[in-house]
Length: 206
Ligand SMILES: Nc1nc2c(ncn2[C@@H]2O[C@H](COP(=O)(O)OP(=O)(O)OP(=O)(O)O)[C@@H](O)[C@H]2O)c(=O)[nH]1
Image 1 (tube, protein in one colour):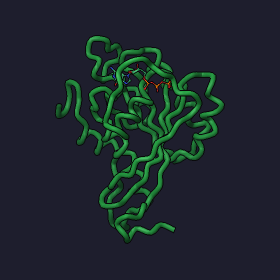
Image 2 (cartoon, protein in one colour; image 1 turned 90 degrees about the horizontal axis):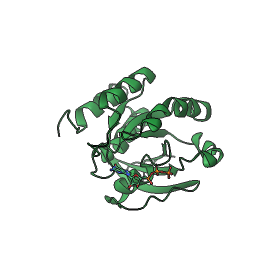
Image 3 (cartoon, rainbow, N blue to C red; image 1 turned 180 degrees about the vertical axis):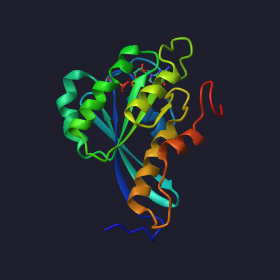
């Protein structure tokens, strides 16, 4: 039963999964969101799967996010497949400095559709937006791809913190609205919300 009356109670418990090629910044995005930090230095690839919890206040409701950080490396794919089915939301990352990670998004979406729940919330994130000089994938290309697949999109940076909080709160808001929508409340528009709230490199409010 969901008990929401006492302020300290968790009203909603949600599972969010981070997916995408190895090295796109999934672990760094999670650390930035959870601890507000970015640890520069050597890259330690995730083995299998790892998770952290964070409680958010979404429109006055306490929402617990259990965030699963998956390994991007091919050899761990069978491990991560098993977790897709329990995910309420998926943050699918590519790296704006790595064209291959962008080209692989279609394959990731095919995999997601094969293994996850039909109504899973998916958001595409172009990470490492801070890397101005190394950038290969333009923001417009990310937007176009996301439109093609009908998923919301924004650019993030685990290094600078750009839009990191927003990525997690936006999917949490979408799920909270689905679960607890008042009869007369209009449907939550995820992409509209993101467009309004996001900060950008060369766009929006910076
Ligand atoms: N400039 C920049 N570098 C980043 C950013 N996010 C991650 N990195 C770097 O990218 C490398 C890989 O980051 P991880 O977070 O470990 O990548 P991952 O997607 O978790 O990789 P796997 O665990 O192998 O799937 C590290 O060297 C990070 O320092 C970012 O937003 N900007």
